[in-house]
Length: 275
Ligand code: KMH
Ligand code: ZN
Image (cartoon, rainbow, N blue to C red):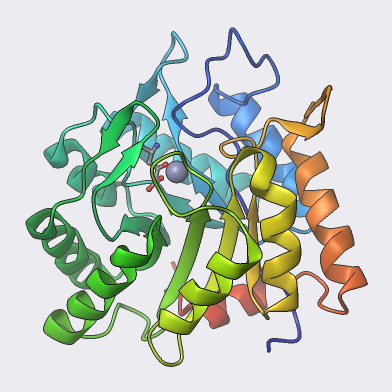
């Protein structure tokens, strides 16, 4: 069990509309402000989805590059770009995300039903994306929405070697309608199936966020929180800023005697390249 807790914030996502969730950071200014607040609260990694001028999800290469630069200038956070994007994004656009030069990126290990949609991650796409992370020296975080995806992760590592940085770090994304449920028993099953030596975070979507957070802390895992996954603190209490979710994670981790991991330590922990 690690002595510290790596806290990742996923502030925006691709699914919620600004019109429905006014506190969602969608402009570069809102995103950098959120990032600063979350870093001050104890986050070490930011998982980034960006929006266009109409607040719709986009993978525009210029905006992505500007976003990476702005986050680096205004924070010390590890910048992890989403390669999942929105369910409507093309594979080519998703591969091109890496050209923005982030520290890390998400890499989902299989196709999964995603509410009424399908989040497509066929094997050839996973391999292309993985090999590009190796070439471009970007640390992948393996996003696992279902137990079968863990078998695909083993296959990826067996066939294509270790990730850039040499560490295998995963995020269990639990409670998505179509993926694995967000409960303690499933979390334990998933952790047992991970590759030997892998480190992991867990994320519980919606009302599974607290059960998953407590299960992850008690099983020695790390945490991802944020408005990509969770929009209410409790019934009838909407999140008004991502920092509230980071603060809640910091409180739980500190109570568990696993205080937040500082960013410098997180860079070492994840094997991120000095840029
Ligand atoms: N927005 C989802 C379709 C990722 O960021 O890599 C995919 C997602 C995973 O959020
Ligand atoms: Zn995401």
